[in-house]
Amino acid sequence: MNLSRRSFFKQAGAVALPLIAGCAAAGTLTHRVPVQNGKAFVAVADFPELSAVGGAIKLQVEGKKDPIFLIRAEESRYLAFSSVCTHLGCQVRKLPQSFRCPCHGSTYDLEGAVLRGPAQKPMTRFRTEAVDGGVIIF
Ligand code: FES
Image (tube, rainbow, N blue to C red; front, side, top):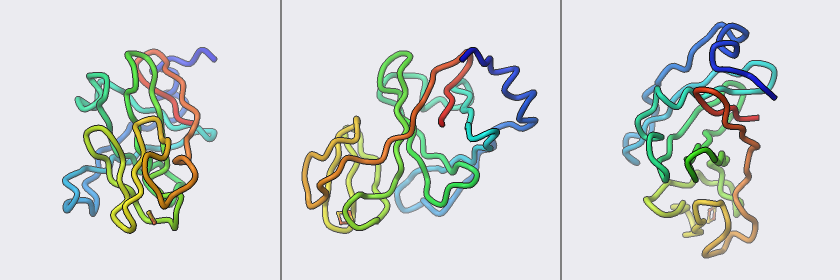
């Protein structure tokens, strides 16, 4: 797929708008992202957190009930995960080198694999594609 940032915005007619959500306790911001044809475009330049490998942002994608974490895993490889713990559905929190669920302590690595239970399944991952100027989450 060859979709530039500019053409995506033309099609979507929208831009990502930062939103301060109820995550003050976790010290994180949730950014609202519109969806066009089942795809959410994130303009990396708009998020300084994604300027370096290992950076992460929390997104509220239009039409999704729960937030999504977007991680810059490598220079041009991004991972997107549901914030829902696969144990019993609590919201996981992003730590510097992992995700941790506050309910029963499940811990996941930055690839979404279980490091410590009780969760048995990896975090739910969404397909991503790095494109000119950003990342598309499917
Ligand atoms: S709901 Fe996350 S560890 Fe139980």
